[in-house]
Length: 323
Length: 311
Ligand SMILES: Nc1ncnc2c1ncn2[C@@H]1O[C@H](COP(=O)(O)OP(=O)(O)O)[C@@H](O)[C@H]1O
Ligand code: SF4
Ligand SMILES: [Mg+2]
Image (cartoon, rainbow over all chains, first blue to last red; front, side, top):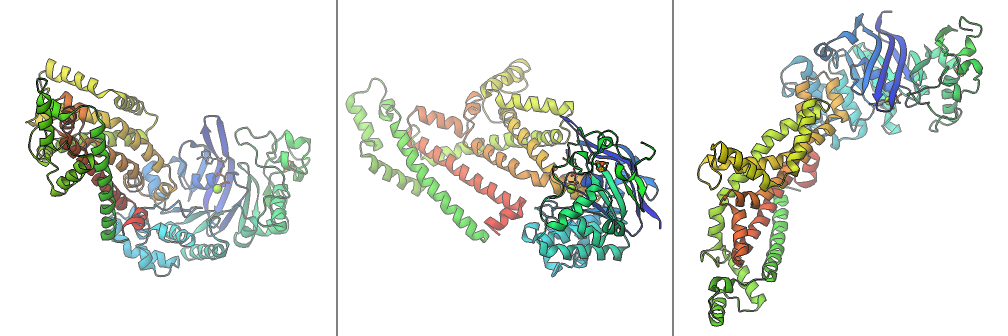
């Protein structure tokens, strides 16, 4: 299978007054054509930052400090602003988490969808109203011609998320990054939206990065899953491997906690994500890990190929080249 | 609510406001010490002369009768007769009004033309040297005493350079100093509000959506930042125009600009009750109309406001 996206040693930091937040710290992975790659992890692990970096949306105080993002072989980090503009929304699209705030309150949704077409075809949004209505139909908005002249405040959350989706697919992008697309929605419509996204992805032949804190959902929909903790990849493997034999203690914790109670905070993992300004030395998960031992607090575990997937934990690497 | 209903409701509110203002203004004028009859009669007049003048002006009647008579004059449309000039108050106001409107519009236009670009620039490049300079200047402008600024301008442009007349009205040259003086004062606030509301709008999530579409910077700025940032800016502009229409008292006085403001000062010193009352009523009316216009513009900018109020 061909590689669409190849992220190498990516570092994205937020440079704040009181220190540097290492939100994405040395992350490498590949995305294959047509696949759904799930990214899981608690809030604050750096998932959104990673997604935004790939879409060229990092703004100050955020800064891409190092690494490469190869998209179809081309390093996006070397693009000029005008080259980026041709990629954003055309080859790489993002669907954001909160449909209420990601639509402009003072324009009709039809206008905002038409704008996505205008951005890559020239002219004015007026020329693309019919196209916009077509796109609204594609995301299964009932009564699309009438909805097109509505303002965001006149639509439900689920409907707004569909509008954002239609903006994202307007130019048939090769890569769709969905950043918690259902977290702000009613449970009742979540499943519908997920199903819609997967269908559209299939229809367009795109690849997808699906970001969520809901690991069990990823087990159902993703081909491969990447688990992030405190700016780092802790485990990356096929859904099959992660479902049947999760290795990293954090991955196991994520799965167990949800098994007990879907809504509750991570019950089986006490504590919370460490400061990303001065993360603990060694394994960043050590302060919360039930298996942590001396080495964990001193030496950072590298990602190693173990049992068909990548995992960063000393438990599976004892006696390895760093011991 | 339909637009017609919206207007009817606001017109009724305006009417109630005006009646209230009428009563308050009437009472305040009577509470002020001083007696118009005595002023008219002059220092040599006898007690009888003064009584006669008082009768002639109707000031001998009980207060409530005076008030009723005044309300009648208001509804007749002439607002009573000026004590000082002997002419209908409405004529005096209408004679001065064009000057006040001209000065208000010119000052606000200059202020907007300067403050909007400066505010937007310093919002988008908050750390640049020019932005720091703009912030300092606008703080300085907003905190200057206006008569001092006026005198500096007169000193430089009239006395020294002899480019512009320092007082009076009549040609476009007369308008320049008073309108720039006022504009400089207005600019400070306007720049700061523009800067903060553009910064706020630029950090909103929907701007990220616009960028993520691949839209160019100009369109992102115009459609998704500026339009959304307009409401606080329009609010300040409305307040400024409202108070300018009430007469920029100090500026008009320093530059001997024949507007409403200097007429008001005049009428109060002269205890010209009907004239002062008429002017203050007019000022209240100007505020009511400007507020109505501002509310209407809110509706044009933001469909949520429109659906709440008049669509
Ligand atoms: N605009 C920002 N400014 C400063 N810090 C940020 C910003 N966005 C994210 N961060 C920080 O980066 C870290 C990762 O955040 P994020 O990428 O949103 O994680 P996730 O999506 O997994 O919840 C967090 O510590 C967060 O506080
Ligand atoms: S390296 Fe040590 S602390 Fe980190 S997850 Fe593995 S066992 Fe736990
Ligand atoms: Mg996030």
